[in-house]
Image (cartoon, rainbow, N blue to C red; front, side):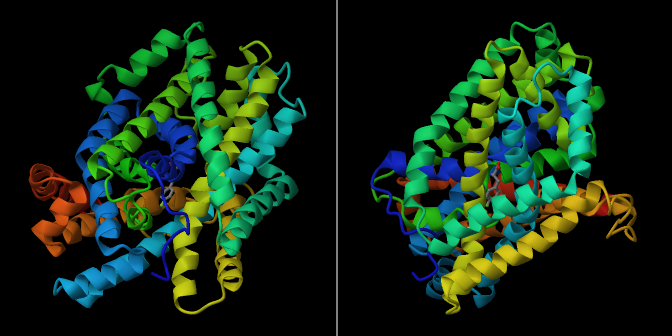
Length: 455
Ligand code: PFF
């Protein structure tokens, strides 16, 4: 089990759920969810996203944890060994490599946006937002994107924070800190959503988010909703397999997966409500793009008594959440190299270096490289910067594609007995298999194929 993910052994059911939640809750909930909801017309996106979580995200999440739990090893070792034991092709281990590539691409933009959060922590401590009108906060974000020393410095600092923990290979202390502080982040979001209820745009925000609006439906919204269901649950890149390896024997996998998914969706909804209440109260544009969180939260907190202190606390907690998610993105990559006998610090340095380089190019998409469209020769990607491509292709296409193979391997490559043991009962095993074979896999195939066809 040389490539297992983390040396922590989950001693309790709670520890397992908290650890998986640590990987799941991050920028996906607080930054990406609101902005793609905004770009895709609110409820037209949100309702599909919730459906995809239930019909695709959850069953595939169970598949992923199940493979790790049955193989009792990290992704590469678990897939290799299970394929061998069950007489399946050795090629299945490539799934872990594809997952690694996806994680690498995701981490490269994740670290950039985490760097923005770090910079915004500094700005809020500094009182940079005090007394600013909503429009000025927006202008400040645009200025920040041009401030290369600050932006790239924070990107580098964040990446160093992440890779140092991964290089040491022990994240038990951080895990504890995370478990202690994450409930505070949820509480703060709840408070913020509560305050949002007192603002004039609250009703409009709720209506826009939850009231079905068939006119806003688009294929892009469907594709984004599917991709985001995977992204937010950290499913589809084999990263969760390692967690399954350490799951306590007596723990119910389906129950744990449902707990994580519910918490994850609730956090996203709270963030969405808080952010869109600001948008509608101040006549801002819902489709504000990747800057949405950064231009609305300072305004949202300004309405709370003692706001700038709360804003700083919020960014501390957000940075912590993105830190644990980034460690979870980087660890499987480093573990794969460690498996090939690389010394861990060297593996962390090489992975960190590559992620840094790609991240710098992505970060420059808003200034020096704004006219660079790396896939411009393909019609659908014309006009997209590197940042645009990284934030859409790996989450929207690679994670669902990985998820498709993970689901197939779990449903067809594991024996019925193995599935029953992993899921805890014959009934759950049957239910899960029916859902995966008749709903999740056909749905995934349909969305991916229609997307390709439309291109
Ligand atoms: N789920 C994380 C988020 O919502 O921020 C992102 C993520 C982490 C995706 C780990 C994939 C992963 F393996």
